[in-house]
Image 1 (cartoon, helix red, strand yellow):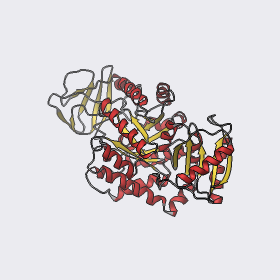
Image 2 (cartoon, rainbow, N blue to C red):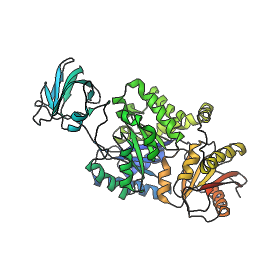
Image 3 (cartoon, rainbow, N blue to C red):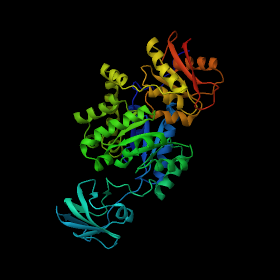
Image 4 (cartoon, one colour):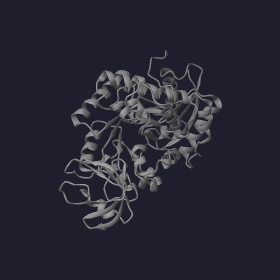
Length: 477
C-alpha cells in the first residue's frame, strides 16, 4: 500500500500557539499549523463568545482539510484581584509610607484605595505581603481591621487604576471558577474544546469542581501559578488530567530564583504521574516585536525540551505579536534541533521514571524496552480514552508513538501528549485485527515500510478503557 502524504511532525515535544488579534483569519491560522502548532489556545480573558466561536470553526475546518486532529485549549480567566480607582487615575507610593487598602468604594489617593475583595482582608495576617501591579510594588500588612488592611510600603512606585493584587503567602478562600468562568467553560466544552485551562488553582478541590462541571467532556489542564498550588502539588496532579507551568504569574509570587526549580519539580512529578505537562509564558517574549528570539529565550525553550515537557507554549508572541508565524517556526526549529542531539536522548533516558506497579504500566514500559531492542519503527497504542497512549508516552520511548483511537475527541486530546501521532480509525475487535490495522497505519502514515518491525499495545477485551494488558511485535506487510 503506498504511503499517502500526511502532515507528520519530526519532533516529539508539542507546540501550543495562542490565537488573538494577530492570528484570527483562516490563512494565518493555517500558516501557524503548517509551521508547527499542534494545539491552539483560546484565551477567554479576551474576546467575546462570538470571536471564539469563529476561531473554533476555523480550527475545525483546518482539521478537516489536513485530516489531522488538532487540540483546542480553552483558557478560562479565573478570579482577577484588583485595587479600585484613584481620584486622579494614578498615585506614587513612597517606600516606608503607610497605605490603607479598604472596602470603601470612593476613589483613592496617595493614602488609601479601595480593595473590593473582603476575602483578602479576612485572610491576610500581620506581616502578610501584598504585591501590586505584577509585583512591581510590595506592601507589608502592619495592622488589620474588619474592613481594612493598614500596610507599610516596602517597595514603592507608581500605581494606577485597577492594577492587580497578589497575595503570595496566603491561601485565599476564593473559588478558582467565577460566574464568568462557568459560562465560558460550558461554552468551550459545548464547542468541542479538548482541554480547559483552569486558572488560580490553589487546592485539589479547585480541580475537583472543574471536573464535576466538565463531566468527562474535556481534560482539565490545571495552571500552576500560585505558590499554594506547589504546597498541594501531588494532590492536584492526582486529580487533574494535565498541567501547565504558568511561569508569568508564578514568577510574580515566587522569588525569581525559585521559578526554575519549581518548573523542574512540576515537570518531573508530572512525568512520574503520567500527566501531560506544558511549560508556558514568556518563552520567546522578544518576538512580540522582533523576528528572532534572544539566545536566552532559545535556551529556555531548549531547557523545557531537555526536561521532557510534553509541550511548550507561545502566548502573546502569536496572539498579539508582529511575527506569529516566525515565532511558531522558530520554536519548531529549536525543538527539532534539540531532539536531534545525542545529549537530549541521554538526558531523557537518564530521567526516565520507574515503571508503574500495575499491569498497564508494566506493558507500556516493556513496549519502550522492546522498541529500543529491536529498533522498532513505531509503537502503536490502541486507546479508546487515551490512557494507553499516555502510559507509553510516560516512558519517553525512542520509537515514535502512533495513537490509534475510534474517538475523534480522544485523538484531539492526544495532540498535546509527548511523541504521540494520533489517528482516528474504526474500532477493532481482536488482537489479530489490531496487529493488521497497526501495520497498515504505520505504513500509510509514513512511519514504516514493508518489512519493518513495530510494537503493538492494546487492552483486551477491546473497547474497555484502562485495560492495557497486551503487547505484540509485528512485521509490516
